Image (cartoon, rainbow, N blue to C red; front, side, top):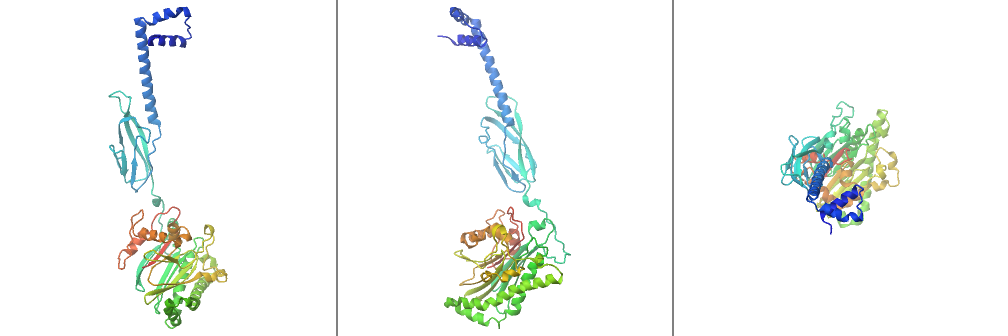
Length: 467
């Protein structure tokens, strides 16, 4: 049997192309058994092992230094946490290490838990120094170093400018408005904010709203969203809301609503008269909608401008208490939802059907005269009666789009539960809007809440809540 020295010598000779004749076998065995050759083979093998180990260390060091270690990106001003897991990044053979270079970044590193966390102070690259040793290196070996980068992206909100609109413009209006009022024994809070897309270039708030308590005991609330593509839509939305309020102030008097009040008072015990109730109210709602169109058209004519330049949606609702119940009459053109949501979220009742269409192409405006002659026009009116007062919500698409996404979600109780949970503080910003009568900070908090971030949704936002 060949010993290790003989095997090595035979392999070496074969590698060199030297054949060993059969009659030289005994001579080769004798050659391999000499003390000098045994020592030579041992020395060669030791040198080979030394060279192999040296190469493996060099190769592993280069591998560590060039491998991709992609720690998660962060956002300036947003909490950051990352686990620098050696196993995850293929560094399980690291025996000692440190990660430095966090000075002034807002981040810190815990070497025991290998957790990086903090609040990044600014956007840009945080270039860190990773010093380490790994398995196989001799004791006391020099420390290896490489760079690891954390990318901190700017907060998307910070990229948007907030340029004030031109206060001297003929149709100037406040960029942001917020107010609260007592409304039919309830609390009304209204906030209307210019969208980021308009603020970024100094544009105007196109949304508008108005409300009033009428001497007849009714309340009227109107909301409108001016079309972004129409140059005078901010004026159109204002004219539309004001026209509705003016009409009902002048015409929905105690004398004129006597017949309607009598019908509604008997309605809870006789639901079959719903059509009669609607027939009595319908002419008033229709006249208010027509006045909105007429006022805009007259204004446009007075300045020799197309009515289409004033394109604006319009939705309004009349409210009155009858004993323990409440009556609601509504009208809507466009995509501003009016919704009743039970305070226990057992039911929801949209008071209007939205003109949305595919890709928003179905949006209609009160400035389109054809809506008044369209076969579907009667479907724009609605009447509801509730035994108790639910949440009454009016909003423009700046709220509706990011919070509900599609019209079908407006009838889902779970979506409304989530919406009011959001208002109650279940949101990334942790802003709580306390819906309680007498809350002195409600407009401020609701205004803050309405600055929520939603990618791609930067339109004007208007929200009216009655509770």
